[in-house]
Length: 576
Image (spheres, helix red, strand yellow):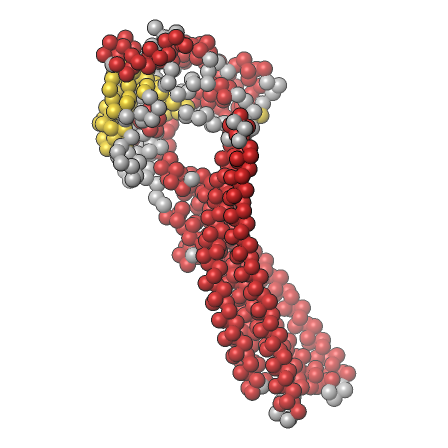
């Protein structure tokens, strides 16, 4: 937390100056009021001098108005400081997280990353605002208040010392209990977010398998766990303020008890006793405000630690220090002895794969589930970096490209097509921001999406829900393909992108692709042999290793695994 503040507070330094000035002013005005009250008692009430009461009361009114004005300005600057710091934190976290490779996203998990950008930043904001309002006022009020109280009556100063020591002990004990409680609470929030995200995203699966009771029970378990942790934390916090008020009121009673005896003995005046009471209330109130800030500190510290953990995590995919510039766009793709293994895994997912994909050719990759097909494809756009060997695009190692330059050469259709909320045109323009309507209709025509887009009431301006939930799986795939086609890149990466299409649509799409993408390099991941039967070369993977490479006809004769795959699909898909 200290490192976070050291990094981000300088960004809002001008606002902090405003906080310090106005909060100091309001603390100074507040400390003037007990002495003014004492003057009213000693110089006006006891002598019966109404003019003195009005005169001194006028001064008190002016000081009170000045204090209120300074307080309002201080709160304004405190709010601006907290919001400004939160804005900077969210911005940095967003850019850091969007720069993560798939490996870092998988390690943290989307739910906890969302919690860190939202809830954790909010906790830090609340703490900063409370600190701005109290960190200046509390020390000034406690320090100068104690000095002025002792000056009014040194004999009663022991009461202040005892009260402050007791408060300090109470706060220390409660702080030691709250920190681990807030750590557990943030972890429970992560769990609830994870369960909710899974259930909302997979609602169709839940209903299809009639798992609503089980999912309700799973959410109930996570919710009850969070509720229990929050209640235990709340009980600790609930004990704090009654104890503080008890100490404050006990100190006031002690001041009146011992002060009355001193007034009766002529050792102090009634005004001085009233002023002392005012000062002790201010002192203990400042300690109580500091206590409230310390209540927020453990949770903010946990959130700050989680934020810094995300900010300190470096992406495994880093841009080159000296990027390759002016590389000719030929579309040549080559994998040289490529190996990839996840951190901590017993063995690599992809092992020593070598492959050359030339412009104008279609290269297909097929294999059983878990053979490493998608992982191999993800190495090309650097969603992951190879742990051994190298991937070359246009004769240059992909790690030597500026990421934007590399990605501009590639059109990717992921295994799970994702559409953003907005219109169909908005989604297509993700591939090409300056695309015209003619460009979009052309790409939709090749992707066999013209019919259903034309049938929509608004055509290209038809609204797509988040994730494309208001269109079918096949429509999502075709729109994703059109989005990749519209940018006309040199290399196309299709990750099982025809799986949701019927055989007729699949065949029409494959027939339309060659004319539109003439001269481009195609790397296609497929499960259906019918999709890749005409590919120029087919790579067969098993356990991450290459066990076959050739055309469909060649592999039928030389690769038993490929022959088995073809055999299993022959009756259902009419594979020759």
